[in-house]
Image (tube, rainbow, N blue to C red; front, side, top):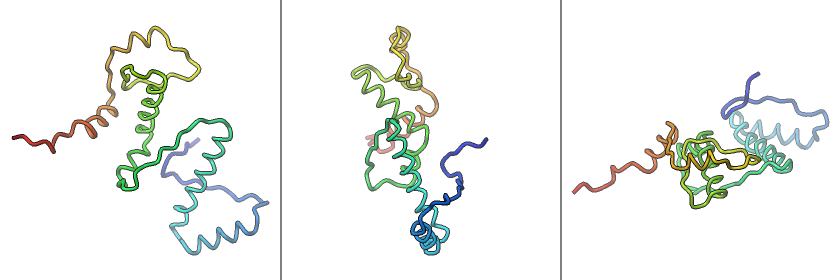
Length: 148
């Protein structure tokens, strides 16, 4: 079974009870947009799924982004690695404010209680390659510094 990921094609059939006005609108937009039709429809599909998740109790947070981001920056923010890193950071800030952030560790499940093992690992500093790349890309670029 193939799993969905960004950039993959999804195809589905419209239900028999789809209103005629919806079908006419889809056909009109398809004729007008041609190959760019999916760029307009995909965000609507994703938004409907997100709303469905919210109704089912899935907890998410929408963070408004600055309008002047480049395509590369947007793609980086949309990567699963970046989302994972940001969710770990948010989890840690909410649940353990003021304590060091354990880079490279998985987020504990919400139902799990903190254990002594977590307390022992507090002083351990582990960095995986994704985190290391993130830190280098965003915090360790000193090319702009004056070396007078």
